[in-house]
Amino acid sequence: MAEASLPMSRRLLLGLTGGVAVYKAAELARLLIHDGMDVQAVMTESACRFVGTATLQALTGRPVFTDLWDTSIANSMAHIDLSRHVDAILIAPASADFIAKLANGLADDLLSTLCLARDCPLLIAPAMNRQMWENSATQRNLSALRRDGVLILGPASGVQACGETGMGRMLEAHELAETMHAFFQPKLLKGKRVLITAGPTYEAIDAVRGITNLSSGKMGYAVTRAALEAGAEAALISGPVCLEAPPAAKLVGVVSAEDMLAAVKKELLHADVFISVAAVADYRIKSASKQKTKKTDNNIKLELIPNPDILEFVAGLPNPPFCVGFAAETENLEKNAEAKRRKKKLPLLAANLAQEAIGAEDCAMTLFDDSGRHRLSKAPKIEQARRLIKHIALLLEQQKP
Ligand code: C5P
Image (cartoon, rainbow, N blue to C red):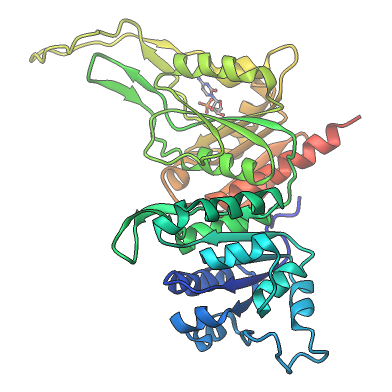
């Protein structure tokens, strides 16, 4: 399997219009370049009043275009040429005035003209005062843009540069950079429904105590994001974690393994793929107390009974979805992982070393399938998740009659 799942270098035209949030766009340009994108900045006259072209030029390593009548472009067709050499246009910040221009097809400066002349997707990140955002004229313009297929990113709510609080803050640079990265991922699972379990389960001993497994949920949440980026519908059944789920996923929060199994059964009906990332507790307490048990000086004994194996249950169904298991091992990684895959009858299992992976931001991973093992070098979990999704898509493709 080809390891890198990053699409080839993407070319983005970053349009900046007049607003204080232009300073965030400078940081955005830096992040996009860092992510390996090729960024061409185009600024309106008002944008240049907030940040100079020299800043964007230094960050992108390219001259910044501002003028419809730029004579440095050989055929004087800047408005056509610039939009022909990019995979998408992102306007950040998009001012209320610029949104109005886009909605009405105006083309009276370089940026609005090349938006009108484009043959690539257009995304905008609005930034404006909350009253301007709420104004029915702006909302009307946004509806028109949505109908025209323009993707609108944000805005967020919060304290604004003018001192007021409300909707209209441009998304943060890192959020926009992540969105662009996601936007450019190949839609390998378009039309598929993916069910993911993530995080630990918690098995109560009494009202305030319990046993659990170490799991941050980071990998399961990254897999959910990667599935969404690949165009799938995703349902995420999560044990207790401190993470924010991707807004586009259907999130079902659970506590115990029995809860998780019940939720999986409910969500399973239409799933094409089941990815079991959760660190499910293998045992639960036979008779958990509803009250807080009083402390004594005596030893106590807890009787543990096995929890159902959720993945084994799903994989054993007469018509199972494509099942993917995870294994975190402390030793004999490959032997244990392959044995687990065979026991649970899984077409694919992802394994890593527990001591390296739990709670970490990066991890190495090995995939086991019928054709053997595939080593994935250490990478951030989101990148590892994208590689996993790519491998799943490949195996699904191979399964087709
Ligand atoms: O715990 P174990 O190493 O066997 O986990 C292997 C795989 O089985 C993981 O994908 C995990 O989510 C799943 N599993 C499960 N239910 C359990 C135990 C494990 O679904 N009770």
